[in-house]
Length: 166
Image (cartoon, rainbow, N blue to C red; front, side, top):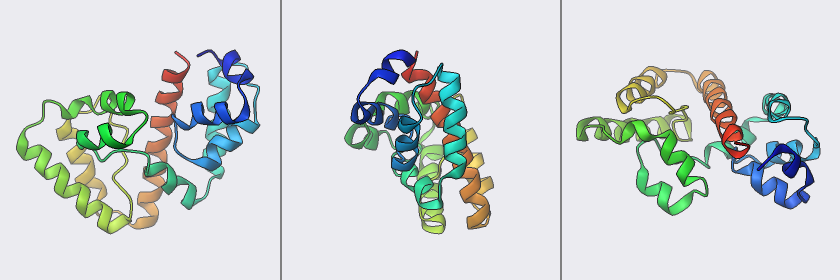
């Protein structure tokens, strides 16, 4: 899709398309309301402004639209962007059973502590690298971790905007 085509979509169709990039209703609505965009870079600038202005509940909504790192089965069942998410998590593909088990255990511990899944921009990272990041972030306070997770979500959103308009 081109940015021009996106600008010309109905409100509902535009929301559906942009929602693939970030599963946050507030964010998608605000972006669609800010059309037209001159370029995808222009859209990303607005995206950043909207994302920063979002509330905690909005960020957490976006987090629910991601599979757990390494949980390929959930990609198949739940996510409209499963091809994107699967490619983003391709570093998990060659991981050892031990690393995958540690990721699963770490994901569970993280979710119990923070109330949402571990969010990391997985593109270009191996399973071992993601596991190390998970372990490093587990001791964070809930407030600090939420800000980190929101920044990671924003990185993912930028990558998905590029995919949507490629």
